Image (cartoon, rainbow, N blue to C red; front, side):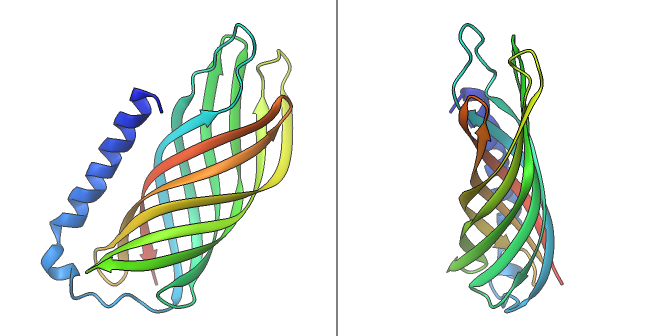
Length: 189
């Protein structure tokens, strides 16, 4: 992980931690909503993992984002759909851009008070636009994806979190993995 990506992730994780510590007395008595729909947004650092073209190293860090909606079946398990954009990775030979949609099963394990660990596993339908070869090539594919994170329930309806997710794209020059590190907000109805 580059130092720029590490600094960005560290700053976003510290911001989420500060928000989580801002209301500890109120939040420790929260009874998480057992079931229901939710929506949310996340943004942060994206990190490309793939091969460079010969003599054209690629800048491997950019900003990524996601929008999502889901349903909690109970306080431990839910399902989520979303759209992601992993940013644009530049090189002297062109750029790589990734985007797509996903469907995940999301698990949640309470750790202490209003803090929970989250894990996700699902499928990702992604499109990779590769302009590094001089002509724009677009590849579509469906792959498995996963992720881990932490969630802090500020109130019964409002939560913040930090997550790492791995997205895999089928590229014209082989597979390309992108790690997305986000800090996000979730509203449960």
